Length: 134
Image (cartoon, rainbow, N blue to C red; front, side, top):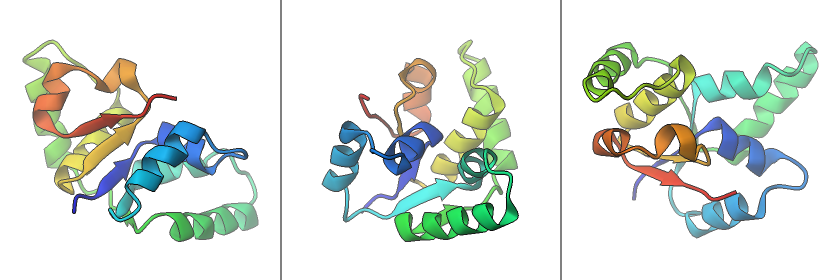
């Protein structure tokens, strides 16, 4: 059983009302796999709220959806990945690099709808990536 590491675009499309049908279908197919959310994604998702009470409520909702919030303790992994990708003239912005490094560190499959940034052979060589068509 492989953990799924949910990218911001997938998590946001799953938690909006109404949720994206393709994301719901994908996650339903993988309901037995544990779901992880990188701390960076949690921040990206929560940063739109201004009220402390709303942020606390939304944070509690996250716990009801995912099995684990994956810690942001991936500095070495991110640096290594950035160097390996640079050798192939491939780049990721900082948030995407940290999310990918979190997935790799957790030995998880990165689940994203961000085909433009993540569907590149050098990235697939470094970690498992599932692109959800939304």
